[in-house]
Length: 105
Image 1 (cartoon, rainbow, N blue to C red):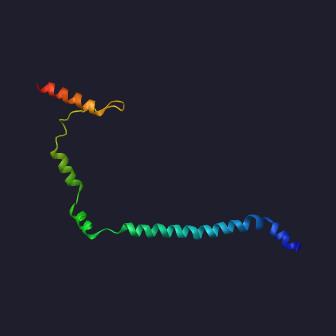
Image 2 (image 1 turned 60 degrees about the horizontal axis):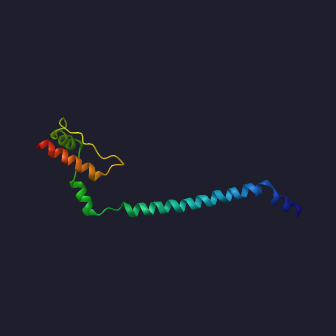
Image 3 (image 1 turned 60 degrees about the vertical axis):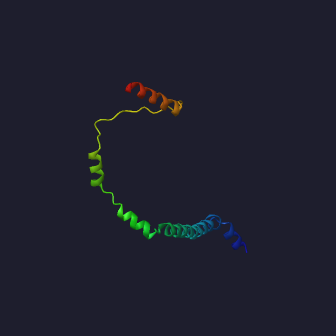
């Protein structure tokens, strides 16, 4: 009986067994959480076939985007000031419209 009591109060039972229980229990718990993650991925991974066909038709390549940029005029542009955080955007727009109207007159 004394030997069993000494074993129960020893470092192995105090630190070793709980550590092993946490390791084994944690591995089972992580496996369940990982399985949930994979199940959700399977659910959200399915794509409607009609949508898949539509995405295949809209092929955007680097060359097509480059051709669009070549067509646009990038040398003649105007810097437009946006409103500051403390300014009202409608007031700034009103001032810009007024300035543009005065330029055309």
